[in-house]
Length: 383
Figure 1 (cartoon, rainbow, N blue to C red):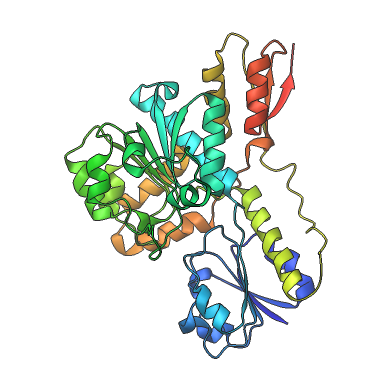
Figure 2 (cartoon, rainbow, N blue to C red; figure 1 turned 45 degrees about the horizontal axis):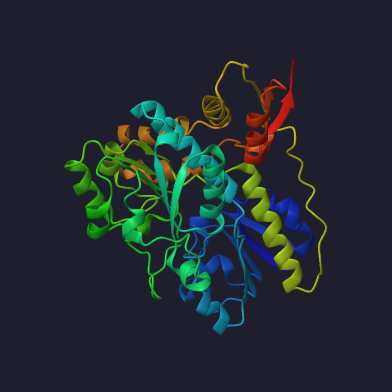
C-alpha cells in the first residue's frame, strides 16, 4: 500500500512502516496530485479533507492525528466508503497544562489569586472535563456550560451560557460546528461579549472560528482591563497581527503540542488503521521518550500549597516563552507572517506532560503531595 503522510506527525514512518511505502510531505502540500494513487492518507488539522482533495483518488482510509475534525468532510468520506479515524483526547492533558500555565502567568502579571476567581468552562468534553477536575483539585471554583451534555444528561452541573459568563475567567473548549441546535462558529459574538465580565479573562484553545475576531478587537479598544489568551486564530497561518498586539498571551496553535500527546495520537490512528485493514490489535509502536525532557523541582517546606502548585506548573511549562516567540511575528513583514507561524509549529521544541516532572517535597506536606500526584506530577519525598 502507498501512504501519504504529513511529515509533522511524530514517528509516523517508524510506526507505519509495516503498512507499506510512506511518502512524507508538508500538511499544506498535500494536493490531489499527491494523493491520487495513495491508499492511506495521514494528516493533521492543516489539511482539509473533502471532495476537492480526494475526488478521483484511490484513498481508502484517512486518519487525522488530531482531537478535532472540523477540517474533515465526514459525509463525503461516508458516501464514498472511505474509512476514517482520528485521536479524540490525545492532547487533552497538554491543553489543560497550557490553560493552567496561562492562568498562573496572568495571576502573576495582574496581581490576583487564582483561588479568588471563578472559572467558566464553555464545553465539557475531553479537555473541559479534565480542566474542571484540575481546577477543582487546586481549589478554584468553576461553572460549566455545555448545552449538548445538559440535554443528554439533565445534570444540574451544566449552567446556562448567560450565567456562566458572569465568571471572572472564561475558557473555551468547544468543537467548531456550523449546524445543529448549538452551533459554535463565532459563539464569541457581540451578544457574548456584552455579557462577559469587563475586567475578566477570555481564553481560547479550541478553534479560531469560535471567536469573531473583528468584534473582539473592537471590544478590547474600550476594555483596557480585559485580558485575552489566544492559541487559535480565525485565518491560520495568516493571523490578525493587530489582534495579537492587543492581547496578553498569543501562541501559534500549540496548546496541545506536547510530545506525549503527539505520540499518543500517532498510536491511536495506528491502531485504528489496523482495525480497518483487519490487522487486529497491533503491537504498540516502539517509541521511547522516557528520558527526554525530564526535569526536577524542589519545593521548600515553608512554601504554602497554592504557591507550590503554581511553582510546579510554571516550572514544568511557562507559556510566556511560546507567547514571546509568536510576538516576534510583529517585527517581520506581513507577507512572511504565515510562513513564520507555520515554522513555529513545524519546529516546536520537545514539551512533556506533567508526569515527566519530578517534584521533591517534604513528607510532611501530605495534602500538597496528594494534589500534585492527582495533577499528574511525579512526587518524591525528601528530608
